[in-house]
Structure formats: C-alpha cells, structure tokens
Length: 202
Image 1: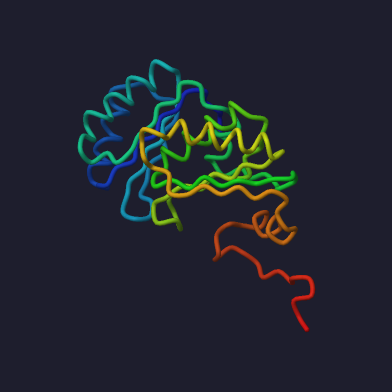
Image 2: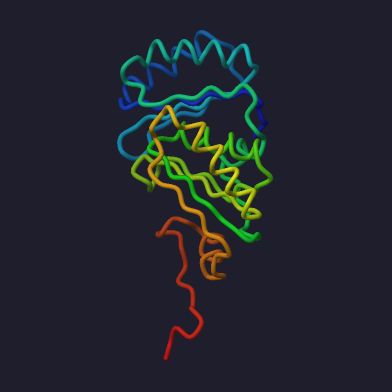
C-alpha cells in the first residue's frame, strides 16, 4: 500500500448514505486511495488518501453529502506514517516499561488521538483497532517510557476534548510479562491464545 501524507475518514450511521457519500467523493476529486465498508454496530467507514488538495476537496464533498448521517469525521493533511501503517494493520511488540490504551466511541477519534499522541511524544504504537469486534469503538495502544506515554495520552485527551468521544484511558507502568505477551498475540479474544501463568497450576 502506497503511503499518503494526507488522509480523511468519515464514519456514518447509515450504510446506504455511506455508499452514496463515497461515490460522490470519488466523482468530485482525483483521489489516490479509497477504502470503504461497514464496521460493527451498523456503521459505514470511508477512508481516503491523496494530495492535500484532492483529499480536502473530497472530504468537504463528503461532509455535505453525508449530512446528518455522519457520526464523526477527521481530516489529517499530514498524518504520521506510523499511524498510516497501523490503520492498515501493522502491529508492534510491547517492549518498554509502560503501556497505555485510549478507547474511543468512534474510529475517527481514535485516529486523531493516535496521530496527536505520537507526534508529541517519543512512543510506539502497538496497534490501532477500528470498529470491528469493538461495537464500533476504537482503541490505540501506546508503548514507551512512562513519562513519554503519559505525555502521549495527555496530548490525545486534549485533542479529543471537544469531541467528548473518550470512553476510557488506562496507563500500566511495568505490565506483567503475561499481559504484554497476550497483547503481542492479539487484543481480540477470538484471536487470543491461552497462556500458562506462572504458578497457575497447583
């Protein structure tokens, strides 16, 4: 997947309106990338990428067409490349002294929190999950030194302060090895693996 520095995301509560909106966006702007589809909780997600001018134009068209069906949206003219990779499924391993999770009620909000956090602090993004198997919510997991992770989380909170879309935030200094191992396998229960806990069997 070619990386794009400019992206936009629209989340809609109507699948039908989402399909119409994505068609309108493609017709009115020379985009380089579009990915669309339904996610859990009956929402429809549109992700576009391209030049700043083309994404900006398409995003504005999408906002008009989507109208009241839009539940959240985001335009990032300079998305961090780590965030772009994580959107498309790239994961990192937990390897530092602290992990933190920001959980949001929408996908655009979690992307905003992730992008803001990593731009303002020296952290890794373990993963970004968007919508599916989360009831339409989103999560981003940061990893790094405690003070850097706290900075990333605080920046993310400020970035979302007007949206009111934060569901929960947790910070775990020195997570147990089993916790890190499980996250490294998956944060989805259906894809997780049973781990043997030290002294767990008597």
